[in-house]
Length: 148
Image 1 (cartoon, rainbow, N blue to C red):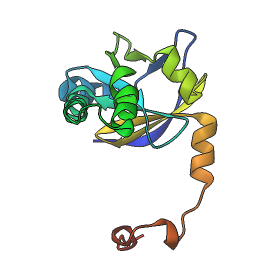
Image 2: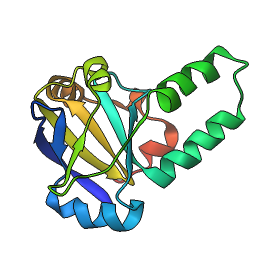
Image 3: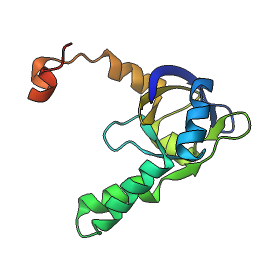
């Protein structure tokens, strides 16, 4: 289970160091293979998924075919642009320049543990996202039942 918010620095080669607390879990749960893909819901953010989870998502998406514009767009963003990465001996992964540029991720970023995956945010987009407050109208009925 990944959780927590970590300020991350992207080095000049586009690498980020996976926090030490997650390295053994990544090696054990995902065979040390991760996939970086566009976050289709939030600008300024990339998803970093466990390889097996991404494969299941990829296979489901590919089974949908290419008949609709939505399916083509999802395949373009989630399959065609995805990059398989493996941590090096220092626990760093390389984030492709094209993905970083599109998400606006530069030197300073935020890595969020989000259950069974990570979100990698540009620092600015993350700050903007977190400054937004939610009201009752923003929550579905099933979320209003949470004891917040």
